[in-house]
Amino acid sequence: MVTADGDHMSETSGRDSDALHTTPLDALHRELGAKMVPFAGYAMPVQYPMGILGEHKHTRTAAGLFDVSHMGQLRIDDPNGVAAAAARLEQLVPGEIQALAEGRMRYTQFTTADGGILDDLMVTNAGDHLFLVVNAACKADDTARLRGHFGDAVTELPDRALLALQGPKAAEALGPLAPGVAEMTFMTALATTVDGVPAFVTRSGYTGEDGYEMSLPADAAERIARKLLGHEAVAPIGLGARDSLRLEAGLCLYGHDIDTTTSLVEAGLVWSIGKRRREEGGFPGFERVRRELAEGPARRRVGILPEGRAPAREGTEITDQDGRSIGSVTSGGFGPTVAGPVAMGYVETAHAAVGTKVQLVVRGKPMPAAVAKLPFVAPGYKRG
Picture 1 (cartoon, helix red, strand yellow):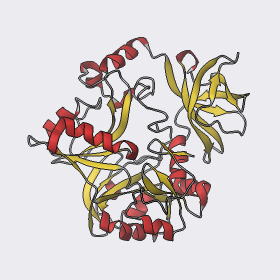
Picture 2 (cartoon, one colour):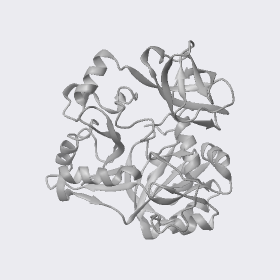
Picture 3 (tube, rainbow, N blue to C red):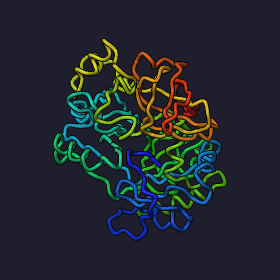
Picture 4 (cartoon, rainbow, N blue to C red):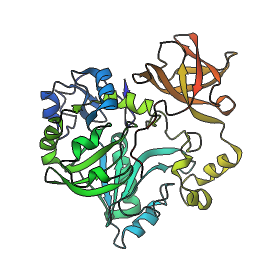
């Protein structure tokens, strides 16, 4: 099983390992019957008694509560203000951070000098500072990178929990507890309260559904989680369904669909760069981006729909109709909403057009498949 944030999950329990960190909801997960696994150095719930399939469908039709407190939460306080912080952050990422208005957020990446991807992250203009959320497996390196650039202006927030409420009934469940959140639109942020607890809420997530992420004090996380779970529409969701949800939504998983060997153009993430940054550059790896935009990349990330019922897992070889290797699968599994197997991977650009017939080599046998449009499931975001 592969899940969010770029790590394989061990099937062994983390209950007795002193080496594993725990989140503020650890006791609640166990009370709710979660199967706990080691993940990115934390004991995390992979599923609850409802099971991955049920949890996936519940999130698509109602609302699912995810514990993502293992993610890295950081703030940047530049002595010259948030505009100065944004300008300096653009030296590390390709996103157009300076254009972010207060209360707006953006998806971007840390890139290498030769155009690879070190991590992907969310950046929010919180008014008097920048708020960043980075992947759990990368947060130590990301923090070191930011401190090397900003010095003491970077602060880790280990005393904050991060909860995600995702699904078409998320606003119905959270709205009565959090003033102003029902009126928010996709990729906006609001400092508010959740059941009286000060919280920083964004309308965002990793499932393709409408929903929120809530940064709040760790010591209040369990009470807030119980309050949300008391709503008839809300159920606890583990990392297993988080992975199948994001795969159907065509969202990249760091360490699998993107890493230091992939470029933003190959990965289909040019939309996240911003017009000014594509023209001016000023971020690591810009020359590769400019070259691949002009000449086209040698390969592209694509969606893949196998014709049969057998899922194609990560590492599965992709060939053309003549059996010549043209790429490999980076994420794959069963898509409960699609009611069949789905996958993403990289193929040579000549074979990247939607509808192109390819073959997936599963257990040594070529299986028919076709390149498909991403995402596999239409997003349910609340647009402005």
